[in-house]
Length: 254
Ligand SMILES: C[S@@+](CC[C@H](N)C(=O)[O-])C[C@H]1O[C@@H](n2cnc3c(N)ncnc32)[C@H](O)[C@@H]1O
Image (cartoon, rainbow, N blue to C red; front, side, top):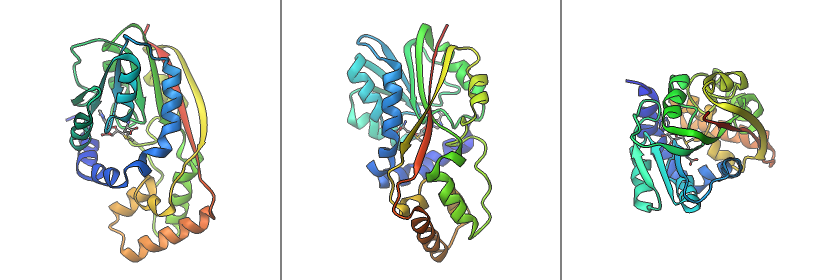
């Protein structure tokens, strides 16, 4: 099955952690999502597709602007919450493989398109769900090495245990500009705008969010290692807010 690992990860592990952290988890994403909504320039009457919509924060915002938005996500706990909040339509399905039975004027995502195991197939599928002239705006993370909220915890963790560079489907899966252009080959007017924003986070949260946290979890790290990790990240940040680097990618479906 396509995207089996990520579907299991989001349903069985990530969802509970996200929901526990709540606003603290999504607040750093907001400036990037806002910039992508501005790049999309949604108009009343247009139909939007929001990929990897999570609990539907951006889907509801887009539906309020246009009148109709569909959020798609593979994570059942997120889709249940989104549906309970209303304000838009939601679909529990894989955006890489789902055959859409309607056509959209706008394609949007806030950090929901980097998890496909075959990004080229996923964007070809999304292309087929768009009308000619449909506009696209996506927020994705830039390289992990430039995202201090990811790189500083990795450096700290490497003092405690081996930690590989993040690779493959995951938050940094589309961080390479050349790869982004390749997977968007069927689209026109592709523009990639780099955006730097502060990543407001409590140091302890970085034991639960980001690539170092994933290694900590997978290694079954002891409470002592976890506590040394949090102390190390607190020291390394020295009270400063780490930097986040993302791309706002816009394009047209010709
Ligand atoms: C980083 S979260 C972003 C959630 C939401 N867009 C937000 O900004 O709050 C990534 C989302 O992508 C979803 N996702 C991952 N792979 C997916 C796929 N193949 N199809 C649809 N959604 C997917 C996850 O379940 C998760 O909700």
